[in-house]
Image (tube, rainbow over all chains, first blue to last red; front, side, top):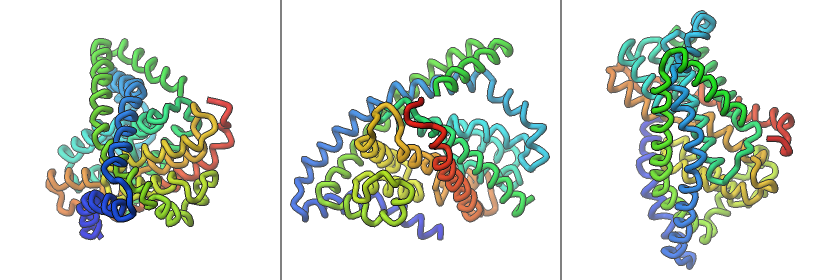
Length: 177
Length: 195
């Protein structure tokens, strides 16, 4: 399974790079001109995202640096520890939706201090893999189209993250608890 | 979103005042703002490359072909998107790239999908149901092989770095299902008129 997927991952981009222009050329598309036309749009989108990304990342950065995240983790630790979510893994749950680099850092810390094959190490692996940097994703994707009224998108994203955590705790509990 | 944004700042301010980390908080805000620009500019190259390729694919009729292939699965999730619309193929390609863990291809394709969905959107400043559904799937993570984590496990001396793949797929399926359910159930409480 993993070998097959690795193989696909390694070949996918080069195949697209060759396949799409080749197919286009065969269908009589002016490939170079079309490419440049589309690429122009890519540049505009990149610039359009900037204010949205600054708004989210600056606030998330301030939130982390203030120590609020640690305070939040300490606050809920007495409740979550008995259900199979140890205090060491809790910061990951709090950081994960806010900061991708931060989350990877927390997982690294857990693996360094407790080992990757400990209960905490395995649980952290599952949680990291089943959730996303929701705030960042929303800022980039909604920023790209200039949308600021995002309706229930944040809640749906956070609920998905939370479900990932709950599922990870249950699965880790059954397999390694 | 307005309230939450303000809340994050307010909580950070209060905690920083109590812990004496106000200067750290200020510096972090400025540093993160700078990083945000670097990050956005870093996306430009990949975005230009993929949107360029997608434009060729569109003109060659490849995009419409893909959209038709995605139809059986996506017709239910995105009922207001016409079945042959290019948005469908961008969504399909984004999800496929995410599954394979090709992150630097997934983001531009996802943005392409958002641009297509925005062309169908009646209120340009407000998210459509289809956008929320798409992002719910996206933020739930659909990665089959979490490459970063496996590398980290290998580096820290795991006996079997890849053992988390199977359980991981199960966990991420749960989060994706929850995301889809939340997008479906919550939409009636967040009508388009509101923020």
